[in-house]
Image (cartoon, rainbow, N blue to C red):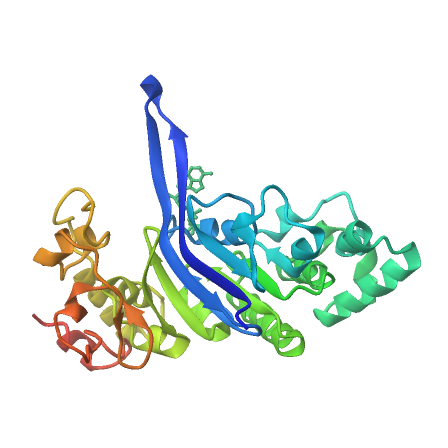
Length: 347
Ligand SMILES: Nc1ncnc2c1ncn2[C@@H]1O[C@H](COP(=O)(O)OP(=O)(O)OP(=O)(O)O)[C@@H](O)[C@H]1O
Ligand SMILES: [Mg+2]
């Protein structure tokens, strides 16, 4: 059975404007995806693309304008107010900044054991034992129980947040940029930990990040979000190595690589993918939201939003470059680290 089924989710924010006018921000538009037990869906996109809004909707922290979120067969959007306790336990979250998620006045033992107090009402020594066990599970030690958050490194603090979430034995975790604040080597340690936890427990992840390389290592599938819309999805390797949508290609090309030759090529590629000046000022109402920035934009892009077209190698892309070319569309730039990548972009 599907663990999480998000269907046609749309979220709007109303912001107050001067003169009594109200502005509506369509933060998430018609987004659908599924996560199976033990599976990771990576959600990537630039800042403001709507990633956290989707995460918050799944966590029942905001009411969508439309669409449904079904978790283990239960329609969460039909539930008014707080989720019942068993659902709050089953869906846990880890956020970017572990420092602000941890009360600085409490020792780790109490922070980790918090869910045991609120959910299970266990006694003190039992809580301590379980907290110690949870710390060991995330690669920390019993001696860390008496430490305060400021005495730990960023990576250790994030491990504490993960330990705390695990104590509720969740079947789904929303990971909103869990490693973005960490240095690169700590990032891969925490990613490895999350992979181990998943292999042990079968937890599903909604893994949110702006960096595609970070997402790729943990994800089974990836969805790329632009201005609240999924413009491409597919298996993690296909999306990361052979991105089809010009926007996803730009995301891949913006990941720094150590090889200076490849790096120069990627910078050039990115420059070509993204129009230097917007071709038209405003995003078209019914067209592709990426059109104003896209070097490939042509007439259909300004009038109709592309349908989801299957991509060779799996998944879908919403881009008119593909629905024009019959049944077997090819990514327009393949192998971004390779020789061919720039020549294939020549008009
Ligand atoms: N509470 C809010 N009120 C009004 N607008 C909001 C609110 N939360 C988010 N938005 C808007 O919704 C859009 C999506 O925001 P969101 O935080 O989901 O993006 P994000 O992809 O998580 O970005 P980042 O990578 O910076 O975290 C943005 O335009 C943002 O300004
Ligand atoms: Mg965010």
